[in-house]
Image (tube, rainbow, N blue to C red; front, top):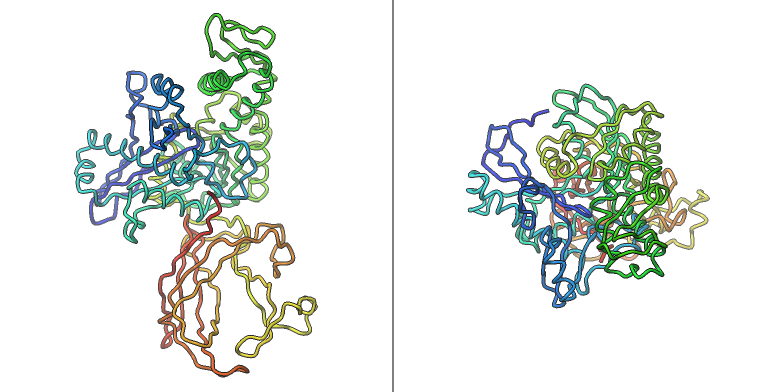
Length: 582
């Protein structure tokens, strides 16, 4: 499916950045009015020079810091032999898998097993350093490879960024990614600068990549996206063919059971296996895991045969622990034990999504670097045969599906609606209903407001229920009445989410540990009419308005609305997210 001609009025450069857990990539396209955009990948990075790496579209997501906190090596340059030697000699500190420190608190099952961040570095600091580097790589490449892009880069204007993030991430993570983009120098910290950052989910980016690279929209009705590397799943229904239009028909799942955690299980196993071996030290273990990740894991296919991991030389032997001449032997069952939890988690999530979609799934799109694993593909092929589905994985996609798909997604927006993962709403103080048992048993939380109404604290009003399909431009409105004894010009309103199993909770104490503050909305009330009134305590003022929320986009948007002279009047509102990660 080709992209549609660009409808803008001026030339601009669009960069798609995919910072993955272990590897990252960047794509770009020059937008000219009336012309069909061509999405291309950056294929040259420092540290990957040489004939065999000339067209590599990804670099390792790693940063080496010196003891003084300065960057010493980054990306592919951090994996060179010279960098490895200097890192040991000068005691550099490695930051890897740092992206996972951004994830929401309810995805933190594996938190204790993540590598720690370098001392005095926050996840935003490390992310900013890596963003700055990959942006420089993109600028250098585009300056040499694309004359139009070079002109835009010289002006340093009309450059916009599309950042991909896992399904299941939300405003809190997006807020930190924006902070990192500012810190990295991608954009200035202004309203205009912030507007140049856009977000897409990795699932939607991968879907767009598959559709533009061989998957015909008229060949499927319901499709499931599975990123085997970071392990997220989304299910979509095709509603139109020309142009392709799809709707999400099940809430996305993000499992944190991808390729990275195969490495974690392998390292845990080897620590125990080699505990009494002279090769059980951290340096040898690190070398073993590096080779395991680069060669043993991606080639494993047969559980009946042993696999081998090279890490040393001819004199490195410990036959008791399966090491001969610098090569460690791992049995088929041992290898399977590293993969099995990930395979099982993916299959369970596929079953869950199929149930929630309430429609037969035609095809599963397998994407991400881990999708190239012969063992994983074989296991999932067997699963799809048992469930009458097909498995599709576009050629050449592991390294660039998300980065290129992010731009296609941003430009064409084939996904027109999404499914709410949680129930969203607001805490409220309800007017007391003295005949209702639910109110009576909470009378100890009562108070009298300025208008003389008896209210009960601890209520919850659901605005958007879990599992609801929401279109891109659909508005959800919450009514507010503000009482105060004096003049007031602004307000802060909390938007809450409920992550439990109750279908439509009415009171917070029904399941108190499953409620959380999603964000706080700040708005200027100075233009909203104030009405003077008299209550039991004397003069007070009231203001009636609505908080308007748009949940259907990748980013949550908010506005203030009120009636003035019989007309709906709007003003912008600012969303601030709780800082739930370091």
